[in-house]
Image (tube, rainbow, N blue to C red; front, side, top):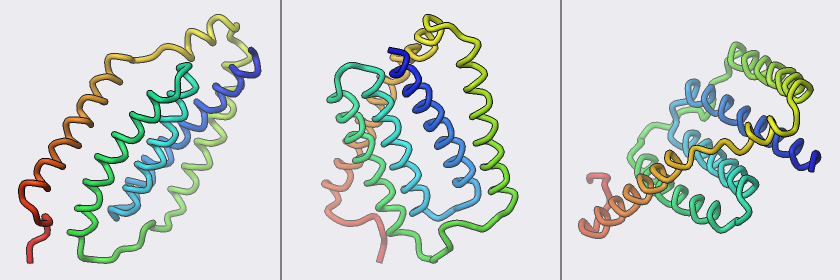
Length: 162
């Protein structure tokens, strides 16, 4: 039981680091391909987190497929419209130092929290889910996906003009 809690705490730390890293990468890069890759990585970690939080995996798989389908369709049109080739990532020493500092900071903080908290408090922290927000996001992404499919089926053409 304690090993499962430690694995989930480690996974939460990895997800937090991924979100921070992708935030900094989105700030430094304005290429649509890089943003698409970051959203795919975030959705994979979100699906893994959901499958570990709940006892059934099909929920996280369906959410991942709906999310990925809607987002990838939008990014495919954005990439087809973009005309200039920019580098995927700008080399910035400040960005790299911020990433390293966040990694070291979160490792220290998570170890201190793990040492101070009892198991019952850790379970409350781990399973405090925002189910209403998750259901709203699922419905919103499903609505966006059906809207994009409806628009592309009715027009029978791409969004790029001539």
